Image: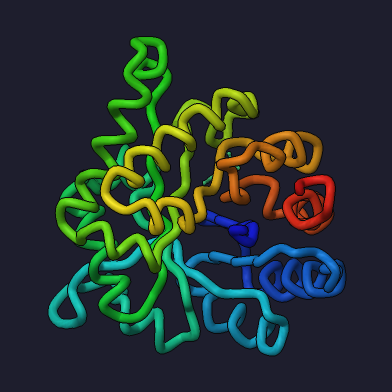
Amino acid sequence: MRKPLVAANWKMHGSREMTRELIMAIRDGVDDSWDTEILICPPYVYLDEASRQLDGSGIALGAQHLNPNPGGAHTGEVSAPMLADLGCTHVIVGHSERRAMYGDDDAVVAANFQAAQAAGLIPVLCVGETLEEREAGTTGVVVAEQVEAVTAAAGIEAFDKAVLAYEPVWAIGTGLTATPEQAQEVHAGLRGLLAKMSDKIASDLRILYGGSVKGANARALFGMPDIDGGLIGGASLEASEFLAICEAAGTPARA
Ligand code: PEP
C-alpha cells in the first residue's frame, strides 16, 4: 500500500512570521493517527526558518525549484546540494508555472530531476495538460510525453525514488478541480505507461493530484485507487484547510 503524501506548495507567498505561524499551526493540528506523510515547500528564503520550525515534527521540507548545476557561476540560482544542506528532502520539478513562465521545457525538467536525485533529494515531478489540450483530447499524450522525457533521460529505475504529480494546468489556482473520475483516468494511464517499463516501480510510485484541492473535495479525490495524495497550492496557506486535506488523505475512509 502506498502511504498517502500531501505536499504544500506555498509558491511565492509568505514572510518569516507567516512561515513560523503556519508551521506551528500545522504541527499543532496534525493527528498522529493519520496515515499521511506531509511535505512543506516554502519559498527558498524561508527554507531555513521552516527547517528550524519543522525540526522533530516528522514533517518533511522541500523546495519549489532548483538549478541543475551543482555550483558555480550561476548568479541568483540555488543548487540541489544547497537544498540538501538546508534540510530539504524533496524538490518540485516541472511545475506548470515554471514550464509556462520560466522556460522549463522537458529537457530542463529532466536535468532538474536528475540533479535533484544526484544530491539525494526526491523530485516531485509535475505533469499536466492545458485546457486546449484537454479539449483537443490529447491529455494522455501530453502527460505521457512529459513523463517519457524524464524516463528517457534518467531511466525507469529513477522513479523508485521520485513522486509524480498530475496537475491539470486548467485546475491550478482556478477553483476548477478535475473530477475524481477524470483524475483517476489520467493517474491510471500514467501508472500503466510506467508499468510497461517496470511493474514494481509503477505500482509503488506515489502519484499525487494537484489542482484546487480543498478540504471539501479531498476525500473524493483520494478515494480513487491511483490517487495517492495531493500537491496543494492555495489551500496549503490556511492551516485548517491544509489539515483537513491531510486528514482526508490519511484516515480510514480512504481505504
Ligand atoms: C499548485 O500550485 O501546484 C496547485 C495545485 O495550486 P492550487 O492548489 O492552488 O490549485
